[in-house]
Image 1: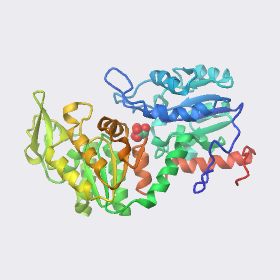
Image 2: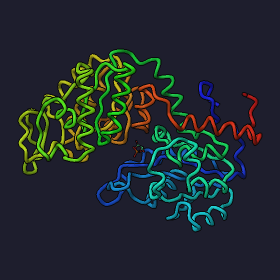
Image 3: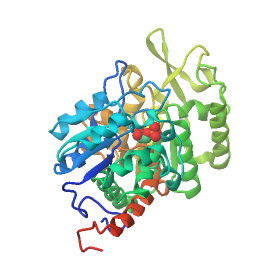
Image 4: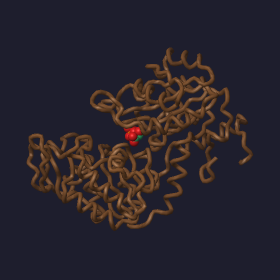
Amino acid sequence: MISEFQFLTMDDVDLTDKRVLVRVDINSPIGPNGEIMDENRIREASITIRELSESKVVIMSHQGRPGKSDFVSLENHAKVLEKYVGRHVKFIDDLMGPAARSEIARLKNGDVLLLENTRIYSEENIEAPMEECAKTFLVKKLSPLFDVFINDAFPAAHRSQPSLVGFAYVLPSLAGRLVEKELKALKSLMPKLKRPIIYILGGAKVGDRLEVIETLAKTGLVDKIVVGGLLAPVFLEAGGVSLSENNVKKGKDFRGYVEKAEKLLKWKKDIFLLPLDVAVDKDGERAEFPVEKVPPQYRIKDLGVKSAEAIAKEVLSAGSIIANGPLGVFEEEKFALATLEVLKAVAESHALTVISGGHLTTALRKLGAEDKVTYTSTAGGALLHLLAGRRLPIIDALEMGKKLAEKQKLIKSKRF
Ligand code: 3PG
């Protein structure tokens, strides 16, 4: 058990001969041909699986979101996972149907089976309290087939979805090695955060990041927020810059985002560092414009040089820097400029630095600066929610799962 958390780890229960269901998060960036672009989360997930060499192991994960291009099967993930686990990882294109259940029933000690993407199943795509999640088809169909549930999905720790919190309500549950490692590291870093604290937020998950910004604004655990990625047009529009439909979507969601950003700007204007200029793709070349003068036919693909310089300046006087998500379309070399320039400044700064998300870790590697930051996390949203002061649903669920382990007298150590 980790002392400050009331949940069990893999050290607390003898897992030999047990039927173990493991929820990992191997949600990875997917390239245009369906290829896995970054294997980091898969490599990290393999540590727990490798250790379960005397158990019957079944793995679940989500990948992407329905409707998005990275919402794909986990078939390729199984091949990559096998490489890191060092034993065969069988994949089945079923999640809880008869095919998956009979495959699970046939497993022997040491076997590893990866089920299909949990989000092919509609109930998995809603967030609900743990008790509700425990009543879903997924939990009802699969839980009778297992002795123990291990949650090792740290990057999804902020989601309250059936595969993440529902099983811990009905099965003895433990934290996997990645959850243990990340929580230990982050809990020890949190009291060391020095002011001014600067958040550099990019990427495409606008709704999620707005939630984090709201929490940070409420708790006051932030001094400056840099907005990049898809947050940039939302905040520019909210700040009175009029952008064309190429950057400002007409839909209800986008309007809702802009309204939230307007409220945040009204309330805490001084904490935001908005872009000064942006880059677009002009006939295949990078072209930069001040934010008020973006020609309507172009889509914003990166922050401009002036913006990157302003952020770098801010970074050099920060006490702590937390960065998540690329500032531009990082996959295209000419639009990786702002992300790389800002990361260079982050690596040079003497601040406490936390980097999260696949793109930024790849960018750090590109710069040869992996050892220049204090901590690199596999998580994006989960890390931001934790640092912003929110409780993570999987922690509550794991605490519930500990009670079931106690009831069934599964705990082997005398540490309790
Ligand atoms: C992440 O990449 O942040 C996690 O895998 C969670 O994914 P989600 O934001 O689609 O729930």
